Length: 253
Image (cartoon, rainbow, N blue to C red; front, side):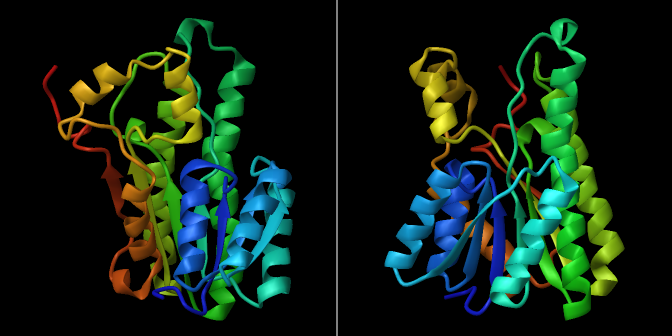
């Protein structure tokens, strides 16, 4: 129970990595707020957590809108009295040739994958500062560390998210707010599995390109997410940790 007594918000909690983190945090003793635009899925996950004896609140939020994020934080504090952990996981993928990328799609990626992260950090920090501190974890991507063709908007926003993490870490350190990022490689989420099943993602080629020879499972990431949220990582801030089976380190075809 490494997170006993703590209160955590996880955005993008209806599926994949966000869902996995929320359920694990609840099992580690945290009261969790599940946030996304899919209330039906959130309600089901919250029910699962309640059945296991945990505490959960499902909230509909659009991270692209500052007022929506602010309301989410306000409702969290009203329900649980405080906010200790903020996980900015909500994001979208964007893959198309850069010469065809519309201004609308470019903006949509940045609004979700960058502005949404900043709004989450800012609104959380405004609550954490008066209470004496807290912990923020941003879920970015290995594609914020390396380039990929056809992913200009995605790579740019994720790379900016990594730098945002570092800036806020050094800015808020004296306020006892730790800010770190997890940069996943390919993981078998519902989204990724769906693309694989449609033949749009070459799983064999990705596994061959990955030194550990496979893509990640959500469980592979959860221990790290717990560690960064717990007091065990109390001297850790401004770090971007890629968890990718060796993808970023590998420089050979």
